[in-house]
Image 1 (cartoon, rainbow, N blue to C red):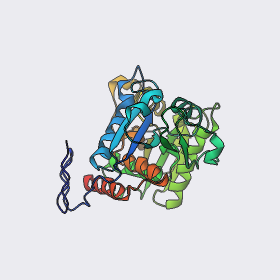
Image 2 (tube, one colour):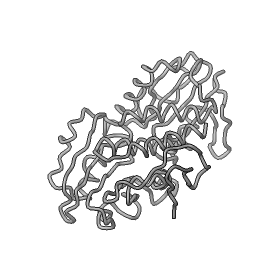
Image 3 (cartoon, one colour):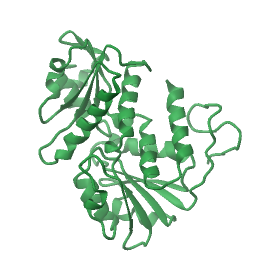
Length: 315
């Protein structure tokens, strides 16, 4: 149970951060649902969904904040029935627009009249579709995935700050934004390239490149793509798992066997590689979830400010 005091310090589970705007519960008839993949094999897969839900829950922005999964409980199909709220914001904790966000989640939620064309997206510009749930009658604001929101670019930069321990990181550094890449879903690569382009336009890093595991340009040759001596590598994945903890470190040459570990930074071909791990574990991602809900009409501006202030205070 949390106590929210007007004109006083916010009490949260994390470190006490004075002089922040106090979040009073104001969307009392609305719920937020974070929809993630989950896994029967990797217990860490669901961790980011629970962590970000906790951060948002502490802002008191919604009466109810729930997590739901494809491969774990509670399931997509049943989640709406667990909510008292008549108005629900669904934010997919996925990187790209594709099979899960365009087919699986809307189908399992039984959204009446859903069609991907409602998003009017080019693969990176999904918006919000407001539709009734066929069996429960609730009004559902179905938002685009976190991975294609503009605010994700800021999370990638924040991830670079976190791994280097330098809030001003950029000068003299290269940045590699890494995705899986797949010929089955061209939008998978689009999201990675989209954020690499946006961060490049910021002019913060000396070089910014999109790299992939399963298509060119490949992460195996990371040092070939940079002139800079220091390279920050940020995988555009929601959770740490087989790819981020095993494949990518070995592919980059940080280690011959992930089980023996590796240093950060690790020196490869005379360059220092600062490997950050999955971007989805960065606390600032809670802001992207709220930004998606805000774009869909939720009044969460104070909660967004609180999450950003907490992130800044950790630096």
